Length: 150
Image 1 (cartoon, rainbow, N blue to C red):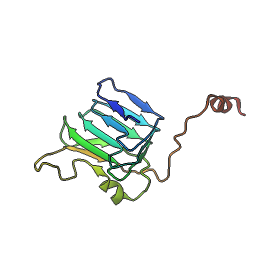
Image 2: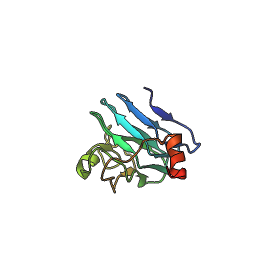
Image 3: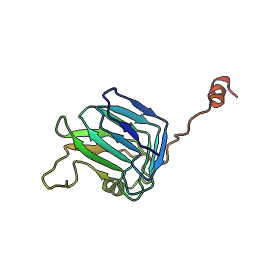
Image 4: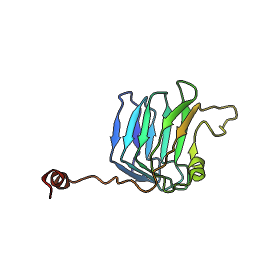
């Protein structure tokens, strides 16, 4: 499966998708986007999400971000204001252990390679979802039943 790959400035919304792959599930080099209700499940050594931040709002909430054998999130770089924070609150990471999740995120808190490199961007991942989030799509029949009371 190919990753969801974004390089535009069109402020896309990524809603209720499932990306499970041995590669990268979501790559973004876009200025801003919203991702909600998705399942990003890496099954190999690549990060589930690979992001280049341009200092405009990235809102990645209410998703499953599940790592394989590599990172969950890798922030490759950042242009824009210093001390920028990516909003990744309220996601399910397969655990509620803060230290594990922090170790699975490569951002401005981590040592860069080559030495002296700097990503002035931090991922805010707390509060963490306490349990898996319902991410299943509703069928049209199920949606009708909500309004018809069946």
